Every structure is written in structure tokens, then in C-alpha cells.
Image (cartoon, rainbow, N blue to C red; front, side, top):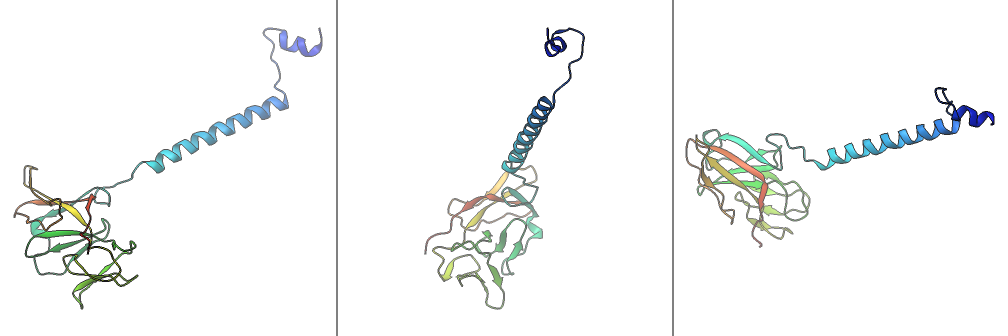
Length: 184
């Protein structure tokens, strides 16, 4: 029996790990850690991170009494990416992205309209297309009004028309439900 086989074959004796075996174990452990980290990062990237009041989900904007009344300038909700507009016909939540190439437009109070700074598309206070390269009016988000018990008492219809919100209700804008604006 040689010395190598004697060291391996005897029960109860410790066998030394060769340098090659150690490097193989180290390589496999490193590879396992890399695969695990990649899996964790992929999972975290794929899962939506929606906090309360952020774009992509329902945004509670409070009681209707705290919102601007008809005739006042549109109010921006930057974190949720919409403009709140109250008209004589009801309320609108206009998606804050131009329908042309996705630029963020702004309200110009001196001109009384929304203007896209990128390519000059212009929209009325209600989001209707006035001029510009935009192919359609502004997109709208679904508004839901709930009473004290949580029952829905008013909601934006499939056409995106302004919704009348009764008094003493809580208003929620669902930024995940966008209604495309009508074509020009």
C-alpha cells in the first residue's frame, strides 16, 4: 500500500485537502454566492415598489372639500404624475405626460393652457388638444369618490369625461388605470 492510499483508506484518520481541492471548493462557493446574489437582485428588480401615494397605484388625495374648486388653476400632484383639474362639469385627473413623445408638460397660467416644452403641443385646461404634433388629447386617470363607509359613489366613466364628486366624500385617483385621450 502506498502512502497516498493509506492516508485515504484508514478510518478515523484525517485526510488533508489538497490545494487543488481547496481552490475547487472556493470556486464553487464563490459561484454559489454569485448565483444567489443575482437571484435576489433580479427578484427585487422585478417586484414593484409602490409606496402609498405613488404613481402606479391608487393615490388617496383626501376629502373633496380640500381640493380646488371649479375655475381655479390646475393643481399638480408631482409624485403621482397627474394634474388635478376641477371644471364646471366635474373633476379630471390628467396624466402629466404629453401624448406626442412622452415629455412632461406644464400649466402656463399667463396663457391659460398646458404647453409641452419639447415640441410645442398645446392643450386646454380640460386636456383637449389645441395645436401641435401630439396625435390626441391628454390621457386621463380614473377618479373614484367614496363615502364614509367606503362605498363608491362616483367614478370616472370609460370615456374619461369629468366626474361630479359629491360633498363629504374621499377622493382616490388610480394612477394605474389610464384612459387614452380621444384622437384629434
